[in-house]
Structures are given as structure tokens and as C-alpha cells.
Length: 243
Ligand SMILES: Cc1cc2nc3c(=O)[nH]c(=O)nc-3n(C[C@H](O)[C@H](O)[C@H](O)COP(=O)(O)OP(=O)(O)OC[C@H]3O[C@@H](n4cnc5c(N)ncnc54)[C@H](O)[C@@H]3O)c2cc1C
Image (cartoon, rainbow, N blue to C red; front, side):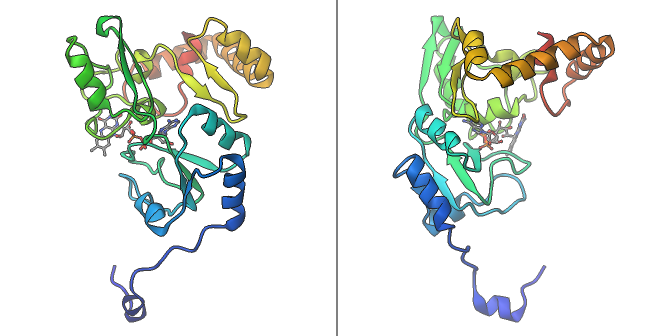
């Protein structure tokens, strides 16, 4: 595609300025979290996909509590970490939330048989820490030098050697999740189910209804087991209802 003369003379287009009402809502939720300079916005306007979407601002939270405050404000948020996704999941014309910069912690546990990792840690860095114990994580996407645990978990990444037996779903023990309402749940806590039922009754009941519907239908069980035994299954992880 070539530029028209008028386009060539006009030079590169600056993105439209961000909506002041959106920036004000962000500031009210978590003061000082927005990065809305043109360079911040253009720097995150693309990921490894072919999409180009310029965000209104890039938000850089420092804690799960700040993410929860953004969620509670009802803002349109897209999370962004290593930016290696291939289908445009990491770009948005609304608000991008960078969960990479301030979430890089890696803590090796139990002689390397477990590891507690924050979502911004790069997969290769986690594996470098585990190598000292002769261990590595299950998922092995070819983007491992740049992709992060947050993106790997959200995408249920796999890779050339992990098959379906050691993909992200099979590697995860527990997660700390921030729900759209702002509720924070540590799924590894002994009272996690009770907390979810108490704090998010509609969500808990909805999940239990879906689980029972799937488990009560032998044809659904057969189909899900067959689909998730192969590697190229996409969409929601319905197999988790059978575990
Ligand atoms: C060269 C190359 C090779 C690749 N090879 C493979 C491969 O072999 N196997 C494979 O499975 N994939 C592969 N991928 C795809 C991609 O790298 C991986 O899927 C990876 O998991 C994306 O991680 P990321 O940190 O870059 O996430 P991003 O691209 O930043 O985000 C991915 C998704 O996760 C969400 N997300 C990110 N952080 C969080 C968070 N903290 N909380 C909630 N949601 C979050 C985002 O909103 C987005 O939907 C490849 C990509 C490239 C460019």
C-alpha cells in the first residue's frame, strides 16, 4: 500500500488525545498510575500480532490492591505483559494495564519442586533460577526469552515439548486472582472456596451450575476429554470442570 501525496506531506499521524474523563476516572481510582504521553501510548500500540491500536493511557500498578481498585472503578482494562501474543490480546484503544514492570518476583520453594512467581517475571528468568535445581517449568513457548508468567497463564501457553501433560494448566498449583468486582482470591488458601462463595455468590453458583451441567452429561464429558487430549484445542478451559 502506498501513501497519497497529502498523507506523505502530512507526515506521521499523532494519535488523538486521550479522553480527559477517562483519565480523570483513572486518577480517582489510583492517583498517579497513568502514563499518557504520546511515546507511552505509541510504544504499546502494537504487540506481536498484526493489530495497531493506540491506548488512551498505559496504567502501571504496583500491587494487586491497585489492580483491584482499577477493576472496582469499572474501567475498560486490557492487561499487557510481555506483549508477545499473536492474536491482538495485548493491545487496546482503551486502557492498557502493564502488569510486567512492578511484578517480577521469583521465589524458589521446596528445593526447586515449586516456585512462587509474580506475573511480570519472564519465563526464561524463572527457568534460569530453577536450572540450579535441575528443574524447569512445563510450558515452553518459543517466545520464552520475552513472554512472562502473566501472559503464559492467561494464554495457557504450551510449546514444542510440553504436550498436554505439562502445559500451563497442568503446571499451575494456585493463583492469586483479582476478579472484575475487585475481589482478590488466593486459590491456594484453605478457605478459598468458602471466600468465593461468600464474596461472589453469583459467580460461585454460576461456576457450580456449569460444572454440574457438564458432569451430568456423558456426551459433554466424552467430548471435552477427547478435545483436551489433543494439543490444538482453543477457547475456554472447560476441562477444568472435570478435574
Ligand atoms: C516468536 C513467538 C513464538 C511463540 N511461540 C509460542 C509457543 O510455542 N506456544 C505458545 O503457546 N505460544 C507461543 N507464542 C505466543 C505468546 O508468546 C505466548 O502465548 C505467551 O504466553 C504470551 O505471554 P506475554 O507475557 O507476552 O503476554 P501478553 O502478550 O502481554 O498477554 C497475553 C494475554 O495475557 C493477558 N495477560 C497478561 N498479563 C496478565 C495478567 N497479569 N493478568 C491477567 N491477564 C494477563 C493479556 O491481556 C493477553 O490477553 C509465541 C509468540 C511469539 C512472538
